[in-house]
Every structure is written in structure tokens, then in C-alpha cells.
Amino acid sequence: MLLDENDPRYAAVTRPHTSSVSQHPVRVAIIGTAADLPVALREVAALERSVGRPLRVVPQATGHGAGALVDESVVIFDTSALTEVSIDPDARTARVGAGATWSAVNREAQKHGLLGLAGSAPSVAVSGYTFGGGIGWLARRDGLASGSLRAVHYVDSDGRLRIARDDAEDEVDREAIWSFRGAGGVGIAHTLEFDLVPAPDLHAGALLWPVDALPELVAVWSRVISSVGAGVSSSLSVLHVPPLPAFPEELRGKPALHLALADPDGPASALPLIEALCDIAEPVMNTWGPTDAAGLARIHLDPPAATPAVGDARWLDASTPQIAAQLFSEALTDDAAVVMVELRHLAGAPASTRDGAVVAPPGHFIYHAVGSLDLFSRDRIDATFVRLRSVWSSADAGTAPGSWIEGAPHVPHALSEDLRARAGSIADVIDPQHRFLRSRLLG
Image (cartoon, rainbow, N blue to C red; front, side, top):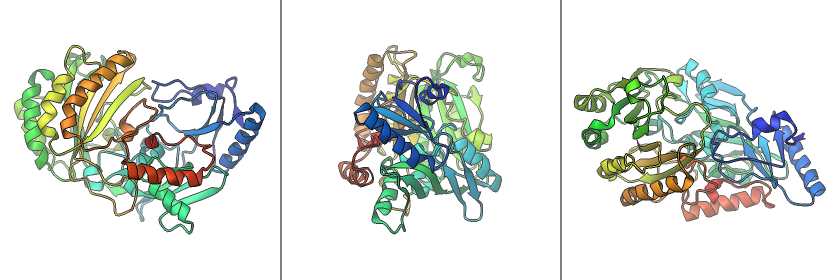
């Protein structure tokens, strides 16, 4: 049943995690099972006839990727209730609902010594994250989450329930799985099947230093980062620490240098980097050590509540360490309207053996910057992004990690022109009338 703004559930659906955008759809549909999708689509068609104008359908689970305009021309299909999680420990696979979060998936997977290729925030739904590529803390050993995708159960715009997989009988579904692997996907997904990976000795942590020693610390990071073990994924950032009790008092409300790193195979491969940095300055906060999936999800120090975030991101090449000091210095200027500027190290991450739009990292590093509309105007944030771009452009690898650009309606540089054209053609077959709002990666 389609719900209007007078229903109390409407308000909950229209509060996405990325609260930099407001949502005022004409109706919302609560999707509790796969069978609800064809019914809801028929109700949308009936509503179209009633109001005398076309309506677009937007699926939304957690809203971490919200950015497009949602007004009275739109019906939101809320898939957050699709939370089934089933683990096959022998096959090392998971079958999960499109609304399941990574915290729920890995809580079950770790009981069997396994993990899914989750990202930085535990509250992100597996669907949008995976369909956008899925860049997580195990990427340098196990690749992108998109490459782990085995099958997607979805519905097309005619309400037909379909299964996208490499060995599907229908070529349309074989093309659809290619799109789900990094091009944002097609149709509306309700269930995903993907590989899990072993994590025999998971170690992870966050280290924070005052920015006084930033030049020396960044110089050491730039020298050592290329020699860390193949399983170590890490990021270095300037983080404006929120004034919260979870952080050391001396850093609250101040900028800090933040190292986050993880290795599923034990501490040895990361220790040379940690020790080299600690020889320069002792961190004020250091959580490095053995951990579980919940601990892994905390190392990025993401805010726990919805925030009006605006982001910018880009894949960068192997020369990135040479510009790191200048990039972080730009984030510390008095007029820098950002709460974080990050460099994520992904060099050497393997490509998937499966075919897909984005199943291998298109660069060695990712630049990522975030501004908050609670603190700065959009104009100031955008002006800061322009200044940062003038620094990282010399290391530009050519595309953007689309799911890392918060609060944007379109991410036109997430895919190369040929990949975007192929993904668009697939979407046209699945949804020839454009009833579904296309992935922002196709913008």
C-alpha cells in the first residue's frame, strides 16, 4: 500500500542518513518481501492514472547515498525491511536482503570466521554499497565488494521477478549482473548473494595525533606506505575531531591526523608503518589490536547519526604520496570548509575474476573530502573542494568512486564513457519507460 505524508511511517522513510537533501515524495511504499514489489508497482501505475502525470520510483534502504531530488514526482520504495541474512559457512557465501546492513551481515558471518567486504560505516546497506563498487577495509587482500557479487534477485519495471547472474538463461539477466557490479545496478533489487572471505586474525585500529607533527608524520607515511603488507588497507586523514567524550580531551574540537588501518591476517604486516609513525610522535589515541567486525567498523570514526554531509572524491595514481603533505595542509587553512580530507591506500588490490562494470580499483589511492552543512555553507564547501582539486589533479586517475561523493544527485565521472553507455543500455532494456530513477552513477 502506498502511504502519504499523513501516515507516521512516511516521516521515517523520508529521513535518509545523508541528511543534506530533503525528501518530499508523493507517496512511499514499505517493501517487506519480494512479492510486495510487483504489487507496489501496480499501485504506482494506478496513482499515475489518478494524478494524470508520470511518476518515478526510487528504491531506498538506509539513504547513505541519497542526493537526488525527491519531490512529488517520486514514489520511494523503502527496502529497509528486507533484512534477511543467511550464511553458508561451507560455501563461504551469504544471501541477504537488500535492506540488510553490513553490521548485521558481519555479525553473523564472523561466527564462522568469515566477513563480507564491508565499508567504513556499519549502518550502510549492502545493496547500494556493493552496486557502487564497494571499497572496504579488506580491499587490498580481497578486492572490491562488487567483485564478490554472485547474484542479484530484482524486479524490472513491468513487475517481473528476475535473477541476475553470470549463468542466467536470459541475456538480459547476464547483462544485469554486469551492471550490478559497480555501475549502480538496474531495476529494484530485493536479495543479494555474494562471497565471504576468511579473517583468521583480524587486527584493526585508529590512531590520532595532534597536527603539530603533521609534516614529519606525513613524510614518513609517504615513504613507508608502498612497503606495507599486501593485506593491509589503510587511510590517512586530517580529521576535525568532534567535541565528544569518545575522543581524548586534548583533541576535542581540534584538527588531528588520523590513521585507520586493518589486516585480516594478523598484526605483522602493519607494524612497520605503525612503528615508523610512532617513532616520530606518540599518538594521543591508539586502538590498534585484535578486533571483531564491530571494531573494524569503528576505525574510520564516522559520525553515528545522520549528518548533512557533502563529499568529493577521486581515484588517484601512484604519485599520490608526493602531494599528500600539500593536500593535508590545504585542509588546515583557516578558510577550509571541510571536516575531513582523506587518502585511502588501495594499491595492489586484486581484480575480480568476474566480469563487471567496476570490479578492480581504477587507481592506487582515493582522495576523499567531506564538508558539513551544519558548519559551513555549500558555497564555502565547494570553494574548498576547488582548492583541494588544484592539488590532487596532478595525480588524477580519471574517475571517481561514486558512492563516496555524499549529497550529490549525479556522479558523472564515476564511470568511463563506454561503461556508462553500456550500463545505460542495460537499464533501457530493464526499464524502457524510465519508471525507475536511474543510478546517480549514470548521471
